[in-house]
Image 1: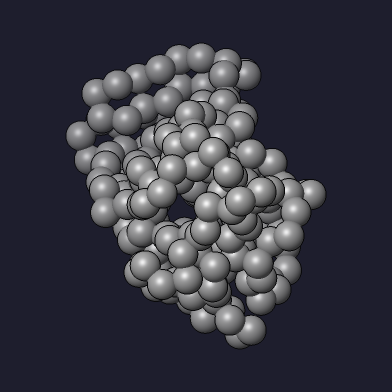
Image 2: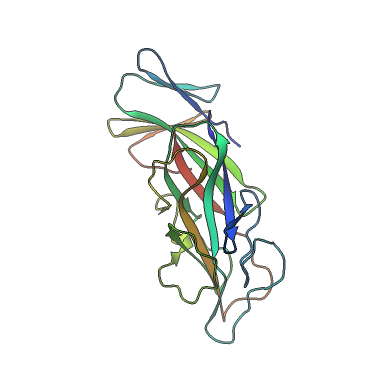
Length: 78
Length: 163
């Protein structure tokens, strides 16, 4: 199971998403930040939960899980 | 802070829940969630044998979150169940007692739903606890070209957005 991110907003309106190791900051009020969670492997004993942090600004998305970061305009799923 | 979720199978007139998040789901000729060899699918002499429907749904049991959106389901895109065996899926809003399917009308081959083209189970937003989004209704057919025995396993992914 991957770490589930926590998203907070500071006093300046900047959003911060962290998995406890890596933090992604979205500055300003534009764009959005959310978690894309999934249960993979349903139907087997190997089922596990995955969480991606998704930061979207101007049609570009940054997907982060662990040390892997993807920058794309695609709508991706775990 | 995150929602605590499970994937439940629902059975009977009342929709009794069984947590199947990390448990096997056995397609059979009966409405129950038990993983056993009773009421097996039968290789037909002609046509296909339809399973009973499996009604699955995302269930939020607790945790802290603002909203859940964009619930979806998908497979890996490759049917590994074996020759003559097809798995179908559809999204249904309201629960009905699982019945033996009689046709594939309204269903789509589940393996056509992939991470790049998933089946939507509801856009939301959803809040609080309880079952969220549409039911994922699945059923399986066994044709005349199928081999006997237990099929290889396949797995399902259910994903959602959360803030």
